[in-house]
Amino acid sequence: MPFPGIFRVTCDTPIPGLPHVHVYMAEGEHGGIVLIDTAMPFGDSFERIKQGIEWLGRSPSDVERIYLTHAHPDHFGCAGRLQELTGAPVVCHPFAKRALEAMGNPDPERWKQRLVVYAEHGWADEDELTGRMSSSFQQMVLPEEMTTIDEGDAVTFGGGSFDIYWTPGHEEGHVVFFRKSDRLCVVGDTVLGKITPHIGWMPGGSGVSPDVEPSDPLGQFLDSLEKVAQLDPSLVLPGHGRPFDEGAERAHAIAAHHEARLRRCMGILIRRGPLNALEVAHDLFDRQLLHFEVRLALAETLAHLEYLRLRGRLQREMRDGVWCYEAPKRLIP
Ligand SMILES: [Zn+2]
Image 1 (tube, helix red, strand yellow):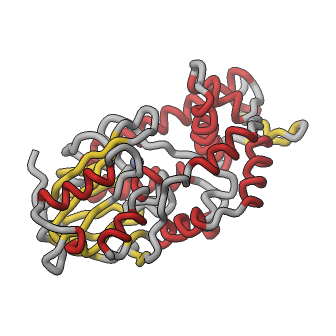
Image 2: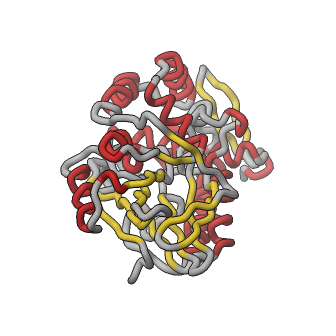
């Protein structure tokens, strides 16, 4: 499948179940090139990106801008080093910028509060959480200089104009790039072809957009899927996996997956009575979860439980220091 005016470099990641991530490259507005996403500092990613620039017959100083679809390590990980190499500004949504700035200046108090909130949802594993905090950032150089783009802006690359759409849910500062002339969409992780992106509830949200409290990442994500579906992309260039057509159909299939999971959450609580989020997660994922998967499964389950609670379809009650979710009495046989 041709990608009109856009090239791709694929890099490895250390993330289980997500073996690679794509970096897209295209001709920029001023005769240079732009990058969209930057992979993460793992294996030979940095070298591959440099080679990609060379294959286009360019040198690092030709890079005009480094766009980020969102502030997750597999997408921004090499951004700081690439900025050092190229001198180009890193451009992302204001919430992604705030998240990156917060990562550069981690607040131990906030992490402690998170541990408390996770414990209130049935999971207390301090070692795992604090371990993650320190190891995540070891090799990452954060960009020094960032500028922002937001919904309503347009940027030029690959021989055309791309409109920016804000698509929070997977990450609060997520954006997609849509070229109306041929309905091509560089979509980041909002719509993936074969897998569904992780939608995780975090205590206090990601903390970058307090204006969208209470945290409702699944509600945001379902709205974002509908936004992409309305654009009706004819060619989708995702952050992971192969490009695909029929973007609206895939966005609706992912929404249907979450609707089914919401029904399963309700079903579990109707069948088994009040449960904490960790208990629902173990039932929902229905297999032995590996250690690192527990936090992700809990966050994903909470995104669904909180979606239902915020819409009055579930309630919760604190019992012995742990939140228990409960289906309305009228639904329990
Ligand atoms: Zn990703």
